Every structure is written in C-alpha cells, then in structure tokens.
Length: 147
Image (tube, one colour):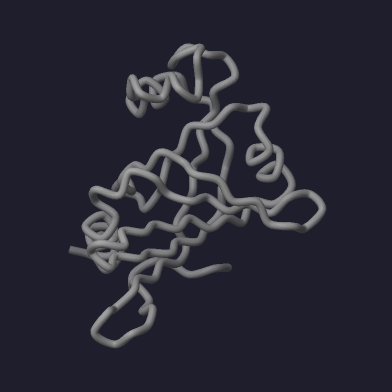
C-alpha cells in the first residue's frame, strides 16, 4: 500500500459517518465564504467530490480562486478533520448520477438531471486531524502538500 493510499484510507475512516462537511472558498474580493455540503468519501485518487449549483456563490468563488478548505466535525466522537486543496469545476452527468441521493432534492429541486448542477472536484493536497490524546491537530501524512 502506498503512502497516498494509506492516507486516503485513514482520511475516509476519520470522516465516515459525518454527513455534512463545511466547504470554505475565497470570494473574488478575498473574503472567505463557508457553507455546508453533503459529504462523500475521498476517491482512490485522493479527490473529494461535491455537487453544487453552477449559479452559487461557492462556484463563483472557485472561478477566481481554486484554493479551498473542507472541515468535518463529529463532536460526540471527538473527530475533527481539516482538508485543503484545489477545486476544479467539472461537468460530468454520469458522476452526478453516481453521487446523487434522493434527499438532495431539498437543495436542488430539479434533481440529478438539473442542467445547473456542477461537480466540485477537490484535489486533496493536505489533511490533518484532531488527536485528543495530544490535544492538537496532526498532519495526515501521504498527501502531496500545497504547491
């Protein structure tokens, strides 16, 4: 198992069962914007995928700055994870169909076929997690780092 594969596996263990992640983007004016997103596990390449409306503030922000952060929290289990990386906007109907869940209609009434849906593809560059025994965040080794 490569170091990257081990890091992805460990990240997915840490975020398993956390349904909502907080995505932070950089607005065109340089201020930060955070919003809740339905969470999915990282794929085999170390990518996090999220669905968004192409007209949303977060998508507009990614068009000017691709650097993003994603935070996960499970207070009861003292699991806290922070991921940072670069976001790319992707149009892929098949991938949207794979990620789609019926409860997403609360945010996107047009369903998985809505032409305004777009994917946020976040290439993980760095991740860290809370180590309660040490009382601090620790890096999750194996990701390539910010370039």
